[in-house]
Length: 196
Image 1 (cartoon, helix red, strand yellow):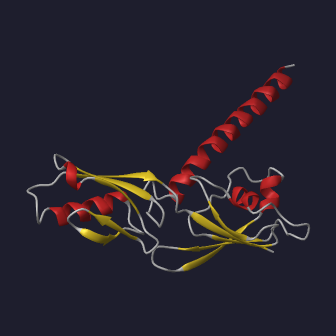
Image 2: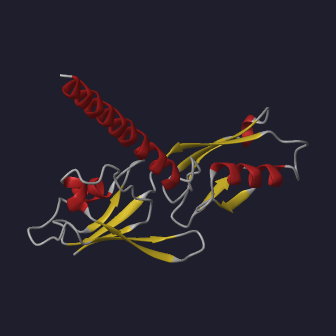
Image 3: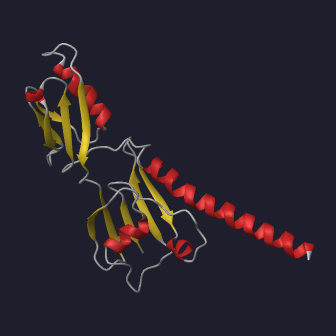
């Protein structure tokens, strides 16, 4: 009887620890994927630039396909690839040429740029917009799912880091679908997913 109770306690403890670990990992992975909240702007994103007590200089502006935004008084400036904090710092510096101690705030209003390419043995290969915390499985689902010839254990995510270096990351979707891998693989904007 004691052995049975002890065994039940051990099984429940393991289940609790596994569940807690599984719930914690995706959030950690997503934070790494998006640089702890430091989202980089891209074409089609929309930002709100507010200048305290200078209403005529405040504006909601889209990031154009060329990666630039147009700001009152400043004109065009590059925004693509920058975080809201970096853009805020640059705009503040430029407005400081015209205004004493400008208080500038930059807020991302719309995220429209994150896209991934899904290629190979998927039903509808192409480029797809993704949402925050999208997984490889989510991206494949956007592409219509796997074809009957797809090798679930042979998926490559091609990712370019900020220095321009390309990384080939192997993903075994078969393990994830069969429950052998608890932590999903999160994609980043501009990843290329190739299914063999």
